[in-house]
Length: 200
Image 1 (cartoon, rainbow, N blue to C red):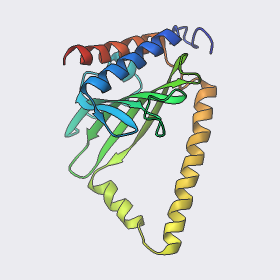
Image 2 (image 1 turned 135 degrees about the vertical axis):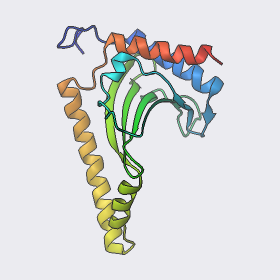
Image 3 (image 1 turned 90 degrees about the vertical axis):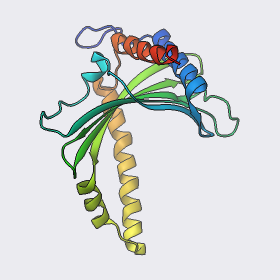
């Protein structure tokens, strides 16, 4: 990873990623809920930091409502019950939900993954996902559902293809620098988490 991104912003340091992870651990342990393989905290309504909000889509002025929340996760090793030491070990998700009307809404997640290969050196990656929700979306999905063997096999094949495309997309994101996090983002994320920790 280079020291600066294309627009010359300083990139996140391993120390900043470690600080984010420390805040994740404190918040989810002291105020969160344990689900066996993870501690979680959220969804809590917040003001999203400006460096994170840059990755959220603009909303329409005539939407019924717009809300922004945070959801925080620390992941545990299923076998040992201890915090994971490799791979994605924690996540901070900022979600924007825009309810257009009674039948249709849009959601966008700006996901920050804390990643480590050795349990000591941490990195921070950004992944943005989005989709629809509401009655209109549910009706379209229900129309696709069928319970024949052939239909279920088709749905399984579609899910496996989606997983493959997601893996490929992550590689492209990394190559294009789309998952690269700036120092300012990391600082603001750590500040939000620290604020939630201090407000208990």
